[in-house]
Structures are given as C-alpha cells and as structure tokens.
Length: 98
Image (cartoon, rainbow, N blue to C red; front, side):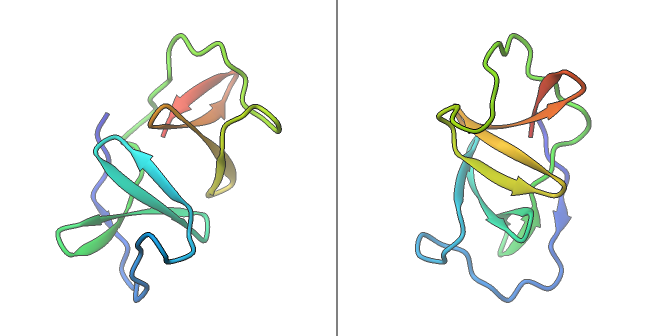
C-alpha cells in the first residue's frame, strides 16, 4: 500500500515519544495522531499519512468498535482502529486499510 506525499505545511510542533500525541505504528514508520490528522516524518518535514486510493482489508471478520480491544485514533471525520500495524476504518460494510 502506498501513501500520498502530502507535506503538512505549517507544522512547528516536533512529534516524538513524549509529545503527548498518540503514536501509531504504521508499516515501516510511526504516525502521530494530531487534530484529526496522522503525521509522519519524511526527509526532515512532516507529511499527512494518507492512503493512495481505496484499499479494502480483505478477509477481516473482526468488528471494531467500543470494547473491541483495539485502540482508536481520530482521523478526519471517522475513527481508525489500530490492528496488527494497520489502521482500519469502516467503509460501506467492510474495513479499509488506512
């Protein structure tokens, strides 16, 4: 799954282990949940970590929600659930990888 390279323009805050924002392990990097966005460090700046296109998570029988055992983070107008190094979001009756 690829991500769009969308630089987060004005971002004076330096994310890190003690910055106060939720850390989300995402593939080969760490995203930080900040104001409904997910930021990742890239070549000395911060990018919005967004999936390129619609990426359904096939074969996902688990239903996420309150009490499902997975942490959630705000992402735009919905919640992503952290599951096995992926962020899952409900979409039209299935789960997408974010």
